Picture 1 (tube, rainbow, N blue to C red):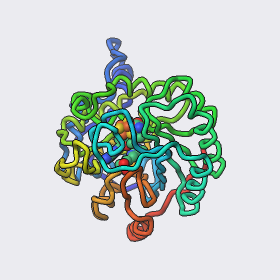
Picture 2 (picture 1 turned 135 degrees about the vertical axis):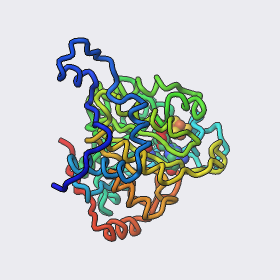
Picture 3 (picture 1 turned 45 degrees about the horizontal axis):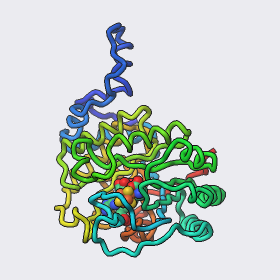
Length: 347
Ligand code: SAM
Ligand code: DTB
Ligand code: SF4
């Protein structure tokens, strides 16, 4: 092990109450959050080298720091969405130039998954532009999960809000992860989405968790929020009990026709800081460097990996926008001496 200087901030345990109990404090209050917003903000405020060192220490305790999981994304139902998420090209409230489509056929999805596997992906994420799925979609959705999983890929879906029985149906089909993002700090949320509230999102996450599906939950940076809001988002995620197994951190992809089209870009250093704090506060989570890599440049991506990101979206498209090219990604990993993680299917 390398020798590293003592860190300036003590890593907090999952529950502040546990720390009190260990110290024999009978007045321990079980409701204290593991990560108060101020503690997260203190991490974000650290000098950059100290912060990155801390993140790397945590990352190396739980993961091979040279391995990156490759995840391919497919839009299985595009556009025409009733929600008003200000960043999204697929909302029918905005004027983005987008061709809407119906739910793809199972065979089209399986074919795309087969190609993703062939290209080296270990995970396949299927996204639909819905407020929530309808009962009539479930036969096809569960068939997609079964067939994609049978290819030996880890499966993830993101379909909007889920009721308990819907989550159970996806679990029964073998779904490994469900993606449903909190997107931003609760205090900033109302500036971004008005058609559903934060609690709706938390309820869906609870339904997913209760069905026994792994939770994939993160947010978007660069929507004009402050550092304090970024701390608030990370605290919300880290205080979920348990915290998500998977945390996608997206950088806003500004899309013409959406209300956030002209948002000034976030300082890349600030983006990397947030990745590092996600890694420190959620040590065992997959931290996914998600949307926005095309605008990021190789050096910023390398820093994100140093800060603890260990997964990328791999493939020429995200949902409705472009992504870094696969050959470029393979070259980047090679230049960095890193490798794609060989992910075996979940039990
Ligand atoms: N409709 C479902 C929902 O909102 O839960 C699933 C698909 S939705 C497109 C999945 C996530 O993609 C959003 O929660 C958001 O975090 C991310 N996203 C969408 N548009 C984005 C953009 N322009 N830039 C960055 N992230 C974006
Ligand atoms: C997530 O957090 N990011 C992905 C995935 N979950 C579904 C979506 C990114 C979308 C970027 C904009 C687009 O292509 O429309
Ligand atoms: Fe619809 Fe999801 Fe886009 Fe919001 S993020 S408008 S729910 S597709």
